[in-house]
Length: 177
Image (cartoon, rainbow, N blue to C red; front, side):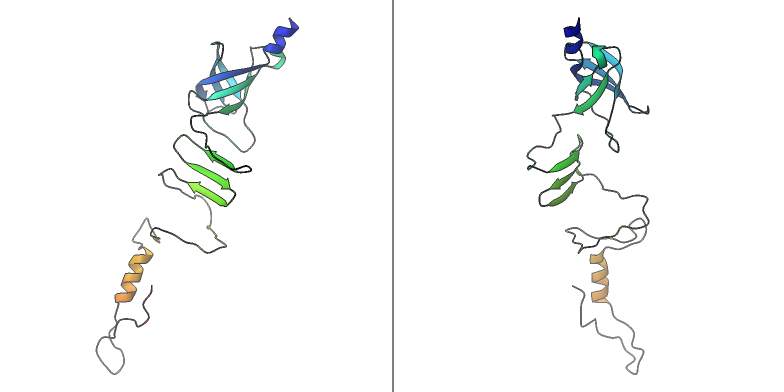
């Protein structure tokens, strides 16, 4: 009897359903032996949460070997796990190719082809030089212009002469480059 209880403490399972609306996620599982379990609590580390796809794998604990109330303590999905990280590197990722990787050379944010949005902050502050391989646009939800558009406007602008010449001034002799 004791030997059977010990064997029932830890099990591998596959996620078949997930309820993320509860205070503690509830997972539907299919244990490796084919035994289905519903409403298994998925305990997550403080400050981290995820909603695994069906087919992800879980390690489930059954205290005292009692299979009536299990806890999924680890959920992983080898189909989407980032591969090739160097020793000491850390990453968060999803099934759509989005990731944040703390590499040996710096932090890499990959939007997976989707927008990256910073929300609900009074400002964003960068205490370093800022570079962009694409356009930078101010007031992007309104009538803002890209820096490239502003440069073209500045480099081509002239003014009506306010002094004694009465004509139009030359284009700026120091163009914005």
